Length: 260
Length: 329
Image 1 (cartoon, one colour):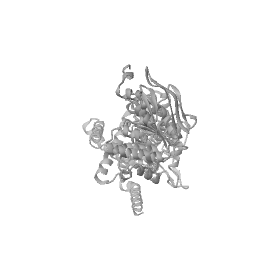
Image 2 (cartoon, chains in turn blue, purple):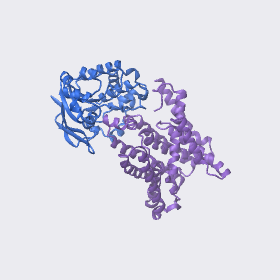
Image 3 (cartoon, one colour):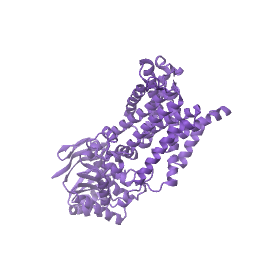
Image 4 (tube, helix red, strand yellow):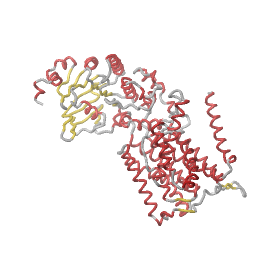
C-alpha cells in the first residue's frame, strides 16, 4: 500500500529549477533510498515533503490526503517526521529533555491549553513527569540512555544524529524522512547507524532516506531513487541502480552528463 | 521525601524572613527600596520569560510596563475604577499590546525583532508625551490614588499609603507572580518555549506551532509587565513618560543578565541587587554630580557577558551545583 506519495513536484528558486517534475511512491514498511550528486535536489525534496518549502507545482499525498503546503508542525502532527542534514537538536537542553519536548502531546492541545494545564492539580504536565518510560525506551533504541542528563551540545556529532532520530520518533510518525543520517560518521558509527535504522523499520515505520554512504543505502534500502540536476533519472531495486548507466554517468561524469 | 521537607522548610523560612523584614528595617526609605525591588522582580521575571526562555529579544519591555501603569492610573482617575481592579485591567490592556507586538515577532528573528520592539517602545513613549489631553504629556500624572484600604471591621482598616503595608501587599503579589512563572517554566509549556528558543525549525519539525506559542508568551509576558506597572503606578503615585523609556528596558535587561538569563531565580537576584545598587549610587551621584549609574550598568553588563554568561546563578551553579539535573533551569 502506498503511504506517502509525491506527484510531479517542481520547485524553482528564481530561475533555478531545483526539482523538476519528480514523482515517487513510498510503500508501507519500506525503506526508500534517495541518492544523487551534490545539488541534485535531495534535501529540497525533503523540505517540500515536510512542509518547510512549498512546491511551485505538484502534490504531496499522505494516506490519500493532500498535504501540499501544510505548515511543518501540521505535517509532523499528521504523522510525518524528519531529521535534518545540518542537525537541529536543542543544544542547551539535556538529551532527555530533547526527547521529552517531542513527547509532549500537542496534537489536540493548543498553546493556551498547555498554559492552563500547568496549573492542574496532579502535575502531569511538569517536565519531570513527561513520558519518562517512553523517553527511556527511545533513548535505549538509539543507545543514548546513558547520556540522558548531558546537555545536547556536549554530545559527539554521531550521537547528535541519533538524538535527532530519537526525537523524531517521539512524535510517533508513520513516515520518517532521514536527511543524511550517516554523513560525517566513521565506519563503526555508520554500522551502528544501519542497525538503528533497521530497528526503526522494525517498528513498522516507512522511511525515506537521503544518503551518500553507499554501504548504508545498498544495505538497507528496499528501493532506490536517483536524482540528478533536479530530475529523477532512475528508480528501482538496489541491484538495478548499481548497474544503471545513467546513474554511473551522473556520478562519474559519462558522455550523457558531459552535455550539462 | 526528606529533600521535599527540606525544600518546604527553606521556602517557609524565606517567606517568614521576607514578611518580618519591615519589622527589622523600619527606615521608610529602605522600605521603599524593598517595594521597588519587588516590582522590579516581577518586571525582570516577565522579561526573562520572553528573552530568557523563548529567545525573543524584546527591547520594548518598558512600554508594556508603562502601558499597564498608565492604563490603570487613567482608568482609576477618570473612570473611578477601584485601583485593585485597575491593576488587572491595565495588565489586560498591556497583554493586548503584547499580542500586537507578537505579530511581527512571527516573521522576525534576533536583531530584527529587537529593532521593531525598540520602535514600538519609542512610539508608545512619544504618544504618552504628546497626547497631552489624556496623559498630560511630559508633566506626567500625579496624585494617582493608592490602593483603596481594605476594611476589616468598623474601625479597623488596612491602608496602603505607608511603605510597610504597600510592601506586604506587593510582596504577596510578587510571590504569586513568581509562583505562576515557576509553574509555567517547569511545565510542558516551558519546555516548548525552550525548544523554540534553541532551534526554531527543529521545534516546528516536532509539531510545535511556533507562531502560536510566540503570541501566547508575548501576551503572558506583557500581562505580567503591565501588572507590575499597575502596582508601580498606585504605589509611587506619580507617572511620567520616563517610565516608558528605553532606559528602563535596559535596566531590566541588565538585571536579568546579571542575575542569570534563562534561569528562574536569576531575574529575582538581579532585580534586588541592581535596585539596591542603583539607590546606593544615587548618593554617590549627588556627591560627584554626574549620572554614573548607566556607566556602571554598562560595565556590569559587559563583565557578565564576557565572563559569566549565566550571571550570578551560573557562577553559583559552577561552584556548588554538581550535575545537570541539579542545575537551575
